[in-house]
Amino acid sequence: MNKKGFTLVELMVVIAIVAILAAVALPMYSTFKQKSKVGAALQSLQGAKSALQTWFDDNNTFSSIDTIPGGGGAIRAGSVRVGAGLAVVPGVTWSLGANTGSTLTINFVWGAGSGCPNSACDGTWTLTCNATNDICGVTATIGDGSLGLNL
Image 1 (cartoon, one colour):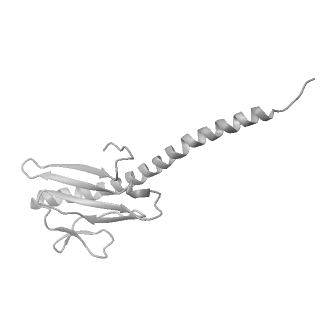
Image 2 (cartoon, rainbow, N blue to C red):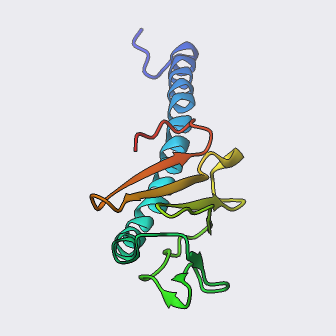
Image 3 (cartoon, rainbow, N blue to C red):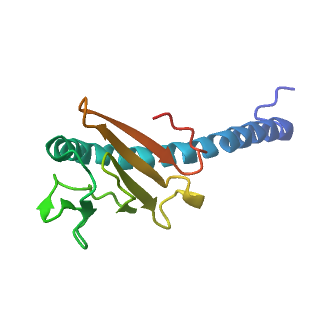
């Protein structure tokens, strides 16, 4: 007898394979989305980096840098606006950390519903400059380290 179609066992095996693949793929997709969000935040800081480096080259200090209240991420030193400021990234709140003469820290926090649970995407971006040799370097610390980003 020539039967056409699949048996119940064959269908169950296919469903099990699809379920295993979904169980592996969904967490990877979630991590990928979180990494892209952090990447967007860090990329938006690149525009501010060049303006801040220029400010440091001219003034040899970051100590007077702050944000303009209600200015949508605008950065100032005293009454002087520095560059275009911090870019608007949906869901991100920027704040300046404790700044010293040669180090400027910018904190970023993702709001609720951003797809980054437990502060996994929150972090700090630090620009450290050396007035002697005019070299500036950037370091970033992201959340709890669970994203495994190499910056």
